[in-house]
Each structure stands twice: as C-alpha cells, then as structure tokens.
Length: 171
View 1: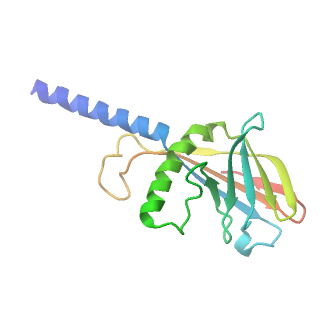
View 2: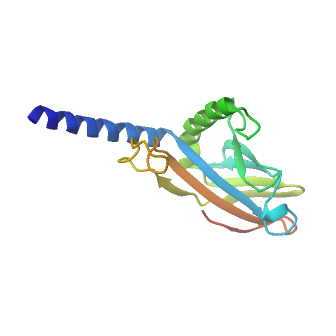
View 3: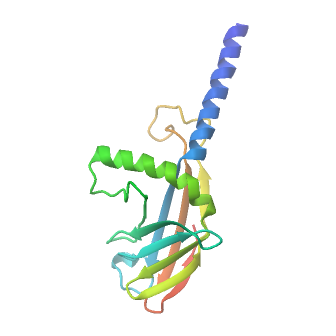
C-alpha cells in the first residue's frame, strides 16, 4: 500500500511538472486589430502590417492581419505564417513551431507599430492579458477539459485609419 501511495505521488508530481514545463515553453496569441473608421468589412483592419516591439523598441517579430476580419497572424522567422491555406499536417507542424517560438518573446512585448494603407502608427502600447491552462487537468482525455497546457495571451487594438490614431486597446 505504501509503495502504491509513493507511486501515485510520483505520478502526480511528474504530471504537474510536465504540465508546468509545457505551458512555460508553449504559448498562443489571439490578437485582433479593428478599424473604427468604417473602412474595413465588419470593423476589421484587413491587410495591416505589424511590428512587435519590446520596451526598447527592438523588433521581436512581424505580423499581418488577414484580409477579412482583422485577425493578427505572426510570422515565424522560418515557418512563416500558419494560415488556413496550409494542409492539415503542415498547419499542425507550423502551429507547434509557432507555439514554442511565441513563448520566447511574448512576455517582452510592449508595443506594436502598424501600417494600415497610408496610415502608420508607431509604438502603440499593447496590453496583453495572460491566462494559463490548468496543470491538474491537462492529462484528461476529454475535448473540453484536457489537452497539453499553454500560456494563452490575448490583446485587442482599435484604430481609426482615417484619423490615423489609436482609439482603444485592451485584451
């Protein structure tokens, strides 16, 4: 009985340790860019270009919005963009590559410089909201409970491309 208890404690500690490691080294970013000027369809800011910057304005990454909804996609230095145009197996590989890469710089993100058409806005403060998946349930084989844990970042930016100004931003 004692051996079983020790094995159970080891299994729980190992599981939690793996979960902590995984969510510390894998991240997702959900970011939207809305154009409040009324130019884009559905309020999105299609085909915008973004540069992600740290506190010293050093470039961390580049990105763009899709051509419909203003959803921001980051560009991995090697894998590129993970878009719906990829085959499922290519998308999966791209997603995992991006998840590891995002975890290396998202905590340093402070600003975004962006270009929407002829509008260029420098050093827009980014207010990231972070949520971390549970360490205790990652191993549960249910679609809405389990799955390996991630650090999940989200942010929202709103600009008026006619005025070339930021109107708001919050996760």
